[in-house]
Image (cartoon, rainbow over all chains, first blue to last red; front, side, top):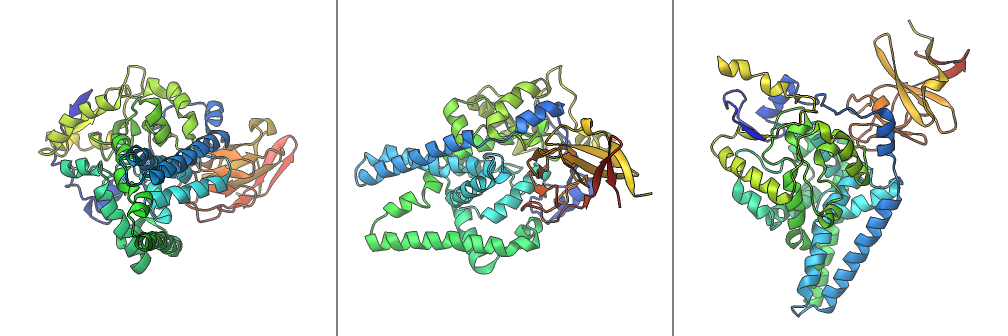
Length: 369
Length: 104
């Protein structure tokens, strides 16, 4: 792979607000709501890949709930002794990390064939993640329309120049918790803010507030139970796993786009596929095939490995492991501290069609003058 | 010009599938249901202009390829976020070995 140093004079300084200068620039240049590159897959094959099935997600969801209930039972049973720690470690990851992939796949409506099953798991996972289910459905729609387009994408995890302390603290879940819980309370009591209203249609604003109120009501009930029993245990089971169990979500999720290009319309440039161990893939529901997911969001998680085999000739070489991916991106992040336009450009195999990166090239002549 | 227009032959569309039909600068999506009936709608999703013919047909639902928005292609009804505006539907008939759609 090569890392590309771009002239910072070419683009305006990045403004990650969704209603700021970069938003205006993205709309004016046609980066917003653009047409994206797709690898060639025949209609017949794509139909087979898109085919929905309840069975894999029912199996995984039964296992998920069984492990959650089992680890919670162990944690409660051994509460007050050190033996509760391993149970909380398992419970935390299932609650604070696996919920992210369930939220994601059910939000797309691809996990189950049956719609209500997607909706039920989506609501439960949203609660676990302290995410307003209405707001985040729309933010994710925007993430797919304008993936890593500055000023448009509401889900850019690491902005430029990168705040490395913030990225490191993300593994503790503290920053996200500190943002997510007050956001739910603010939405419950005073409604949506201007940024949220920029990507949520007006007809959904009321539903978003009602959803926030339900979440807040459950947290208040949890607090009352904790007070009544004079025990910290209810918080360890509801709410706090968002802190102590989110490390796996961050570990896998950060790799989706970190250090790669922004403001391009080719997912091969701004997304990353990483080979992972089977446990992480189960927790993450195969979202390690992230280029493939962004190119073809209608393909369910259980079909992504097959899709990967079909299109990998057209994609950059996948990172062989999470360790390799972080090792590769670390120097890029350090360089971005001084040159925020620097990014990691991963080489395509000779069998691939060239990158569709006209939005990068489009300013190069100006830079050369 | 509008009215009945020959779009394709019945064999051009698989069962439970969709195909694109362009006519006079407009794009339509023509569906063949699992019951071997034909339907037609506007060719673009009402959410963000994606071609529905690249989407996925399940029973009487067409799912948009871009954000998984779903419509009932028989009625045009939007089935929930992220699609909020219904699809326009068009009458279809099979005549003389052709699928005809009324483009008004």
